[in-house]
Image 1 (tube, rainbow, N blue to C red):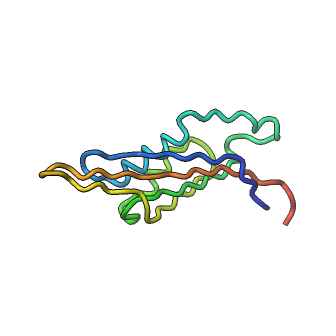
Image 2 (cartoon, rainbow, N blue to C red):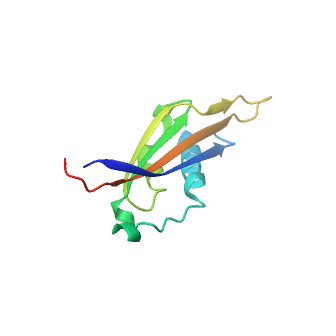
Length: 116
């Protein structure tokens, strides 16, 4: 089986109060897919459940991301979420909260149906 990349979406999510990497990551994924409506699957004899959805989340501390929680933002397909170093943390000003910005890349692939 070989996967063929069909869709690439990017998004950004922010947690303004609390510096919660998972919250920012979930918002980034939601931002990436919010305006997508994918209807070409039927033309290919596929369904939404045939999708492979690979998500890469960039945050300053990848270990702080609950990848299983982020995966729940994707309604279809076989979902894999990986957190990597990236994003941005804006330091607090005068006792305020730090701002955490997460970036998401959501890549949707389908099996090309070719053997081997």
